[in-house]
Image (cartoon, rainbow over all chains, first blue to last red; front, top):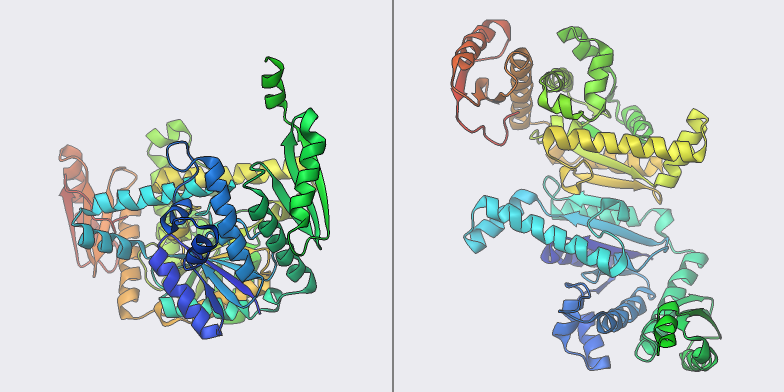
Length: 274
Length: 270
């Protein structure tokens, strides 16, 4: 009864490992099909959601407020799946936002570099040197995406509990290693860890509900109590605090809302010159 | 019958893991002995050997020749030791010095910095700030060393078969993993992988014998046929050829030895 988060540089490889692991353990699989659900719920083009998971927020791609909102919707959907337990999650960068959950096994699966190079040279008709450069560029892009999006390096092995390279170990053996690992007692959910994932899920729902109206909020939850942080001008503090409390209170599962409103110095300074 | 290399930062419990694996599998544990062996065989002071293997090269050293020689000596001593199989090696750069040998299981152990700092404080009796500074400096040195000599980042996950984060896992879990992975058939020595190891050992010995006078050479070996690659065809390459031919009588296992000047070395040459 655990959560397994599979990350890989190669989406196809990660999906193969995730599928086999889920089949072997009889777990559910949470993958990119979640984007369809999010697309239907919020009426957003599926391609835009997929871009959120590939491109960091930037002025010339998706503007950061829109990027944050779409990412919040994806996180909401992912956490709703993970809270059910017995699930393998892949392709949704869950490693970067499912933090502090002791019964989540975070695994990174690495493609055999020679295999990768051979595939690229075969498919693209490019030289080995070009294939190596392409692989390096992809890795750097991924690193940049995760640093800009979450301040964490997705390619850093220390972000995971286990990293398995498929240069010598084959995929079935890698699946066996993962399924044996998750059987360890420390990956059994405890009352506290279940509570942590429920808190994350609640915070995710509230954030998704509020981001449209309040784009700068941060939300933390603990046993039904929410702490929402936001920046305000002095004159709008009371009004905004009450609006947030009202909106957040309407989300099912929320028992109490505390709003921490910090002075927005830059806006204050900008407005004082008017 | 595998060879297991354990790479880790200081105080990452790598040594503890290695020793427990040895007890569990009945393997031999190897680390500092390689430095002693290399110092003895090549008549190099142990302190110089240790410095060359451990510390990142300074700018002057990068231009100089001696560090390459020390690494060649170390690699020769290490490959000679691991020929016996059933070994756990937890010294420096095992994953790079034994590259290309299929039945080597390359493992990296990672621990959180805060845990490592606590271990260092307990062991060395220093304060938190000093412990942190020592560990970070050590990590930097190891990183620079590997990058300067091999152009590889030791933190690059693709260099290893398995990376284990000692946080949720404890030492016993890590030992269990590694022992199970070592039983996989890919990590059992067969005739092919054994031959590759023997070739690597032979190439290392030849390089160690030649590198002091000829700093820029690379050595490849295939079924006892040794090829020495050197950059420039001049008087020194003729000297090298003469010296190389003499090695056939000095080093056991060489079928044939050739020197190729101005020919790019293959990727598996050392």
